[in-house]
Amino acid sequence: MITLKQALSLSQDELETLKNEIDAKVRASDLNAYIKAPSLNGASAKGVPILIKDNISVKGWEVTCSSKILEGYIAPYHASVIENLHQNSMAGFGLSNMDEFAMGSTTESSCYGITKNPRDKNRVPGGSSGGSAAAVAGGLAVAALGSDTGGSIRQPASYCGCVGLKPTYGRVSRYGLIAYCSSFDQIGPITQNVEDASILFDAISGHDSKDSTSANLKPTQTFKNLNREKRFKIAILRDHIKDASNEVQLAYENTLKALKEMGHEIVEKKMLDSHYQISIYYIISMAEASSNLARFDGVRYGRRAQNIKDLKELYLKSRAEGFGDEVKRRIMLGNFVLSSGYYDAYYLKAQQMRLMIKEQYNKIFEKVDLIFTPVAPTSAHLFNHHASPLEMYLSDIYTIGANLSGLPALSLPVAKDPLGLPIGMQFIAKAFDEQSLLDVSYALEQELDLKLD
Image 1 (cartoon, rainbow, N blue to C red):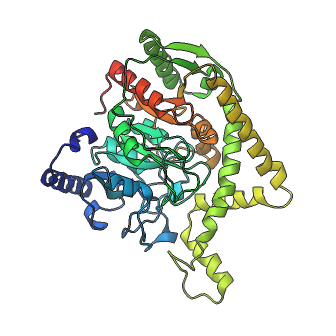
Image 2 (cartoon, rainbow, N blue to C red):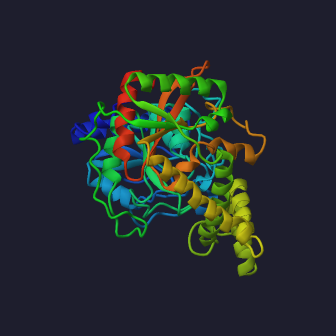
Image 3 (cartoon, one colour):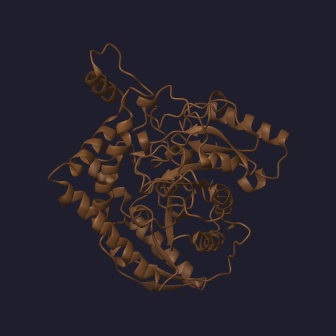
């Protein structure tokens, strides 16, 4: 597939040809990365075609978060990132499959069925932005937008062999993103390489008065400032690596060796065990999810239960029929930790611990420029691999720290396991320092000379 950088130089006629080619490929593909062929989901504005995750509003398109409860919901407005794409010679083209309401790490909970990993169709593409990553890696999209709540851009990018960037919280507007966990969610790019990630990030970044959490900063210009010659002091967290598979640990050590040979300084640091971060993240995210999803009740929009007697039955039946098992599970747990008698013991304590983790990151960044960790404990696993929801939650063990602290992080493919499956590593940077993330990743990508095919 042509890269985003190359596509931006095409004429409008060439772009229309490209869109027709993508549409034909999607119809012929069995990956199920798109919800439907792009041409079937409404007219697209002129510009380079960008795949959009199914929780980002595009005016006139049916946007469902891959959930039955939003069947038939037509977005009445553009999300701010879509408006920004239009101003930068790009446009939405197709909606990608995802875990229902972004709750999952495998893209198995979608009402549209599973998405397959293009590297091995018997394996998951990761989640919740699995459709976006699978499409980019499978040659079905030039680039894509995803959302990252606890690793949902970086983990599927790692599983599929793409570049995935989670911006600093507030760097990219969340206006028009259907919320899962408002204090964690961030929209970001999934691309074929670091240059494309930089281009797409620059296009969607910037202050938005419609988003109260948007940072009052101008759009970034990271692409024109990419510098592969810069050298950084990089921290590693040895205690965290023990949970990774042997293949991931080997890839980690080999990448560290490459970074040292490039002239980067590596230093060891310590912070709170990552298992505590998992607990904190899921308490807070489920609490916010229970609140955010209360609006989906069968009254205002989306699916409405039929043959009901009263308002209470309308609520119960609409939500029971519309939500999948994982969404119901998180809503119930969220209500539990917010309930009287448990709020202080769980939710309040989790928020206090979240602040402590943020302070630990800040302390580390007083001494270093970047932190380097794996993205996931393993490479992509087979479908129906997890014995329990808790086992699935543990796949986020390395990614959620950046979300808890609102920090930017980038996933880069660095190796392949013995089965030929991609292995990704991530860099985490100080708040609003995406330039350093992209600089170090751009240089490492060229040093490793990895190919996506």
